[in-house]
Image (cartoon, rainbow, N blue to C red; front, side, top):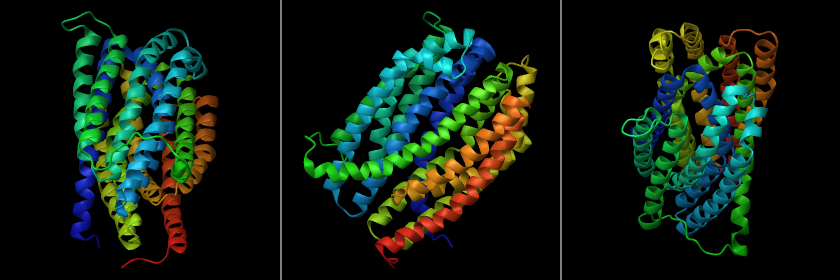
Length: 453
């Protein structure tokens, strides 16, 4: 039975994360709606291709990969009340994140057309994607820096400031999209306006979060020379970072390959899949937020050596996440057409039908996504990044990619079958991560000792 104080602590930490992620996803939803209404399915496909690559790469290396390591290590340090150690991890994480972020952004700018072509972009879609990508990579670099700062804050159980940052970024992004894409009060810039809006909004958000972490937070980056005593801490960062970014990489690249195969089946199929995915991102926000909360709470309890408390946090976050996921499943079953109509004009009847069917089928996978996401976050909180990597390799590369290659790319089945395949993927993923969580936690207990009661 979940105790009231545990339930309250989980909600206190996770609600701002849910609100933050909801705002970012709503920002993406409004962005997609405005681009879709501006240019139709070709523009949706082009921007979807660009964002799929840039966001996947930034997530693999920084926004998810490195951020998870920093949150886990800072949380464990705070749990031990070792604030100097937490500051050291914050500093090293910020340095590593900047170096990686600059390298990624520079190469994405320089080789954008080649990368987009390799990902399946052709003709007008390639042209539009390339213009958008070469501008938006500046915003992606700024976003990666903000994510590193947010990871430090979350490790210290401060989720309110990242939420405030998300309000700032989302507000400016939506406002500037409306002004710059359609030319309200200025010249109509179309997709260039969408990219410029991204850069400006991310810059404002980074300035705010940087000011806070430097002036207000007890755990903040101290920009001192990296000396030999920090080598152990660097190794600890990479011990979690490497399997985390490999796991995110395995998942994201498998999704990207699947997107390439879907776009090869035509812009209608790809646009329908993009709309359904955009709507589903709203449903998985609570699971992602509770996964982040699990990383912070389980990591802090693990740092305290209170292993019983750590396991309770993991189970509590999972239970709440599954209940919310079931509610979204019911929404997808009852009103898929209603949701899709927000994204595309009535004349795109085939896109509307396919996207609605994708959502209807996708209702099945929601509880299993919740289980997988939260247990994965809990495992990373105790420093275990290898278990999620193993599960992702099995479900992404042994199930998802081969099945989509067979049924979508070769046999030319409808895009709806993609969602039947992902149902299989997430059901297996949820079962495996649940089993391996208990095994992985048991291994940690054998290594570090019995429960602290």
